[in-house]
Amino acid sequence: MDASGFDRVPEGPVRRMLAAANRHDLEAMVSEFAEDYQNTTPVHPDRSFTGAAQVRKNWTALFAGLPDLTLTVHDAATGPGGKIWMEWSNRGTRPDGSVQRAAGVSILTVRDGKIAAAHFYLEPVEYESGDVDAAVGVAVGGAAGRGDGS
Image 1: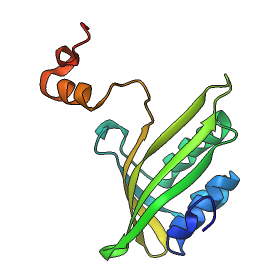
Image 2 (image 1 turned 30 degrees about the vertical axis):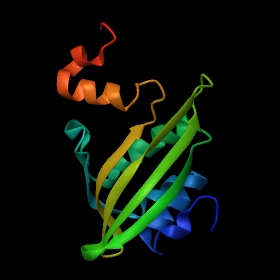
Image 3 (image 1 turned 90 degrees about the horizontal axis):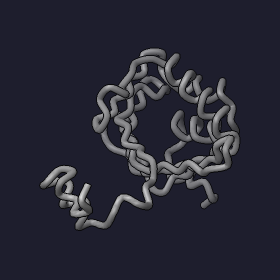
């Protein structure tokens, strides 16, 4: 297995998109998306969008703002209806030298040889958000449940 983990993803548009992203080849990457691509972001519904043009806009900004951006696939599985479930992460250095890391799952749908849709669950990696007890406290008590006086 190569270090990127892309070989965990079946041959086809998702693997090609990932490889193009790691090469920062915007044209090759965007060509793997259907024009009517639907991105659903359930945890942040206002971030959902339609269209390959927004994919282009997003990745243009990512490649410019994180010039060493790399993607890694940790696991992947296929399902019915052209579904590919992918656990993945990315890492890149911002112009100020700080490191951006994100991790999560994407459930992609391939239709007619293109990436037609995704349910997108990629979030910034946090190292200072508290342990599991703090998370449960916030879940049941809101900000007051943190126990830190805030």
